Image (cartoon, rainbow, N blue to C red; front, side, top):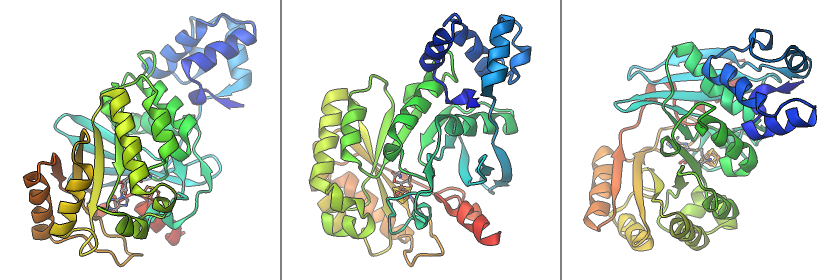
Length: 342
Ligand code: SAH
Ligand code: SF4
């Protein structure tokens, strides 16, 4: 049985045509599942009976099991979902003045294994399917009876290590016949998989790209992120430049501040020199502590000084307050807790 949420409009139309049905029925099916939210093929009354039967015989309408839903004092909501093969994944919903943004998971575990990240504590078990990503959005919308207006692909996993599925996921949530989330409201974050940054640059959609930089030089970055041995900073920054040239889009550099690791004034200067001239802004955020590691978040005053220095050196930057700290909202944390408790 195939999961209907794995299908893009194009793939569904092609399959239907191959099976002898009219390809335009794909639009009608999308309309039922994504607009009317009818998840029972038998109730899709405008489809010909043989097609309804075909769908019943070959497709299932997937569901995620909601294992846990935790609400933070600041309103951030975290979900622990069970997959069909019983693996657990997380999603986080944040309320903003401009809408609700959902942080979506792309893999079970993560092979990149960054030194500070709870998600990297476990090697990747498998990639998520397209449908398992789509269902995170649908399940949260149904649980909260609210529309998800923004999607950040920043949950557990490296999106560019599950590239094709993540691209199909983006197509479905963005499409007018799908969830209609504007491309500018979608952000994908990568630890810096250079070949797929280049691939991403060739795509027409105006989806935002975030790069997890976290360091001003190779020595520090390699210590924090093993991937830096494969794609060192020069190669990474060159690919970012190519991306900006090709797309005219501004990128975001994520920079988590780790106490006395990457948060000196000298580091801010080094970072400024390194990225000057690239159409980008730096998202400075204090580290969300993870019990398994010794890293600490920078003190507020150090964080503020680092941020001020970047601005003074002419780098566009934002300093975000961290959210959901009381519910282990940092990437991968709840899942780790839950598995230990089991
Ligand atoms: N694998 C991708 C996307 C998922 S991680 C990537 O690394 O970009 C999303 C972001 O959360 C990354 O910038 C990552 O470095 C950051 N992150 C991971 N653990 C964190 C923590 N404990 N506190 C703050 N940010 C964290
Ligand atoms: Fe994987 Fe991103 Fe965590 Fe690194 S920060 S281990 S790439 S999820």
